[in-house]
Amino acid sequence: MRYILSILMLYFATACSTPANLPLATGNSGVDDEKGLWQRSEDEQKVLTQSGLIYRDDQLDDYLNQIARKLQPPEILEHIPFRIMVIKSPYLNAFAFPNGVIYIHTGILARMDNEAQLAALLGHEMTHCTHRHALKTLRHFKSKSDFLVGVQGSLIQFSGIGKLVNQLGSLGSKAAVSGYRRDFETEADLVGLQLMAKAGYDPNEALRLFEHLKRELEEENMQEPFFFGCHPRLQERVENCKDFLKTRYQKEETGIKNTGVFLTKLHKVILDNAWLDLKAGRFHSAQRGAEKYLKVEPNDAGVYYLLGEVFRQRAKADDMHKAKAYYKKAISLDPFYPDPHKAIGLIYYKDGEKTLAKKSFGQCLSLSPHRADKAYIVGYLEKCNQ
Image (tube, rainbow, N blue to C red; front, side, top):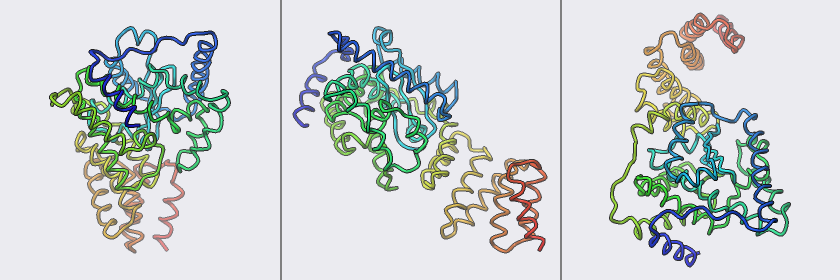
């Protein structure tokens, strides 16, 4: 591995420009293999598009694709029309199909700090496409069936992504979870760094993203399909990144970060993903996401309601006191928002304060008389009257 890394770094350090994509496969079998991969990619992407897993936000899509176009010259974009799409999932992952369609989970987007970190991720995934890692991997196996089947079983160990397992085909599962050989992943990391730096981004942000996500994984003891963690091991990739930065960019201390623009463009994703984290029982991640969103939208009643839900559902010592404070804040910002009235009513009821609970439940129903959980709230009102 060290030998491969040394050769790659020597090449990158002496190259005057980003390596172009590999030439088209030669020979009939090679062309057929590549055409087959692209056709299978399109078939699997149709299933994903209809699955309900795609995060729909036209402005966000435009922004992500603008960043992608900055990283590649026109001749490559003409051959591989890269397209970025977002998947509704709190897990820290991203993957690319051979035809240039890149899927990024809301989970990893929400944890980034700036545009430079996004460019590092996109550069990595683009390199898998331009350097034909899927095609090379296919040729490495004795048969296509060895490559295309049996991959989804590796997803079962990761709880909470069952729907994605069912929607991803074998090729998508290979890209999303199994990944590629270590030398391919190292190549994607280092070429991705070169792409972002050439586009004017601060390459040091790639390392900061590695370290930031590594710290979060360790703090929360996460086990999941993880863009930076599966292949090769995260710490190894951190060291590779450090070595490359020392070799090539040690004198370049600045570059584009675009932190403010990034947070403005992605603040809705940050909040929506915090709700996904809460649904998955990842309370600390949900709290971090909500607090990050507050930096952009400090007067949004919805985020205070979310924070109240984090503490109410976690239910550790003093959490109910914090939850009530957040619900009251949400109500003060938007008195016509029904959900915090219901939530604080549940706390009052649990504390035996039935008069206050009844008042809160009643206020919720008066603001939203036809809500889906009306029968549930009416049940509590009846208990309050007993």
